[in-house]
Image 1 (cartoon, rainbow, N blue to C red):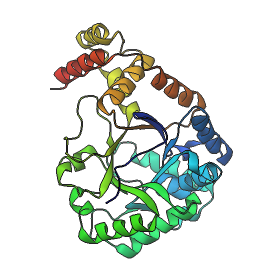
Image 2 (cartoon, rainbow, N blue to C red; image 1 turned 180 degrees about the vertical axis):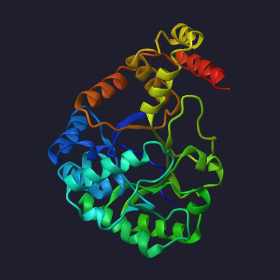
Image 3 (cartoon, rainbow, N blue to C red; image 1 turned 90 degrees about the vertical axis):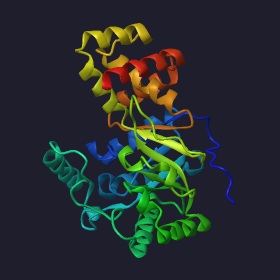
Image 4 (cartoon, rainbow, N blue to C red; image 1 turned 90 degrees about the horizontal axis):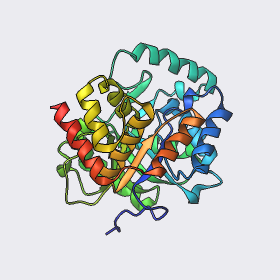
Length: 315
């Protein structure tokens, strides 16, 4: 039996860097620099996926990690993949396509990006899944990843016998040290039914709710802290809530900086055994995010009180 998951680099909770925004940069060199800024500021967990930048995020991250592979944790995914044509286009061309598709999707939420194929809602295609992993490893310029996540899969899909056999093969071959599932919190509500093979869970962050508890120890990752910040800022026009939050934690949710401090504080408090993943294409934002995380100024009781207040206003 494999040992319990152990990052063995840094204590948890930790802050990780997501690469979904790498295509927001105007050039490959700028995208690469953002990774160096995060790493130089102490980030050692990097999360990517084949669909991020239609393959370009993995390409860029692969160049970045090749001389520091042993110093960081590398996670990628399977289950959503870019169209083969898009994955071979130049960076600048793909960046333009991403901009156009983003405009098309701006009023629609919860759908996969244009030019992306999803096969985690259908019957297992073992040939396609194996090919997807091999393509990711080539783009990442590595023989293995630390974590391989099933991207936007349901519990029922994740528990398919053929998929579990494939993942056992991946683990025994050493192409991944651990496997997990990365899906929206709505798809993971019956998490207690998930196979024990999955040692990592990754889902969207919530200020007021967490996944149901299970008896299986897992690394738990959350993403989407900036959405929580936007939510707090949107609620700051409610004087009663704003005053209660000031009294509870000393932070004014009308301030972007304070809303970020509170969101990161709650992420740390509610997910002590996991990684909070953020993405940004602005160097100053990356530094600010890491600085605020490291300051960890809010005590646990203040965070608990803040969560309680937010829950009372969300019901």
